[in-house]
Image 1 (tube, helix red, strand yellow):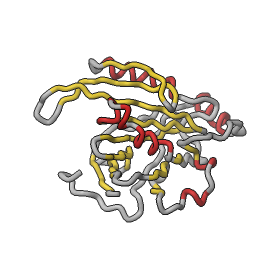
Image 2: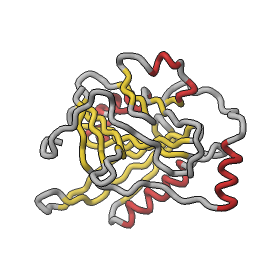
Image 3: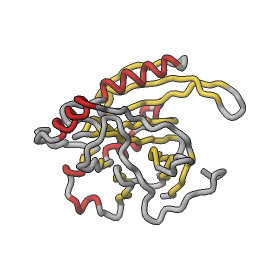
Image 4: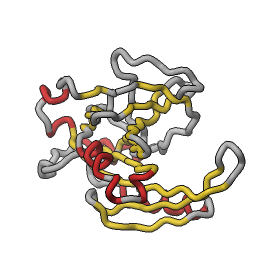
Length: 226
């Protein structure tokens, strides 16, 4: 597995809470967790044995612990100004899986709300968004216009998957061949099932990005190589 550092300036997806909203979030976070354990991943760190997280096949990225597949590359999208890791990209041949994790209130999931906002943004960009039922529940299929380095416009198809967990939302975007050809999707879906989210106990505003970090021993690639 190759560790690469990809520079990319993107705004963090967070909202500010004040006053009674903030108090409501803290109150919800203090409630006892009554959710049933998951039978399939992605998992919360409290749902797995700690020794599992320290396995040789696991890669600790802070808020996300992932397991790579043979031949898969790990690339990290790093903001050039803040030097913070914003997203994880798992690449296998001509397919990719982008992972981002966000805080959520304990009282309810936020994927349904976020899903509507993503669909509205795709429409605003001149594309289309359709809901479909997938192996992780309701997901989006987006087709949006994208401009390549030569100025040519083409349509890009992606699958956007959301998984609501205990006080977190994991958003996964399937790109490339796996987004349009079902037979290429299983490795991306298995990689998503292997993810463990480490939310932490600190209070956070809903939609605030969970902190990611470079894995131990990772070396940034040259900018032109990334």
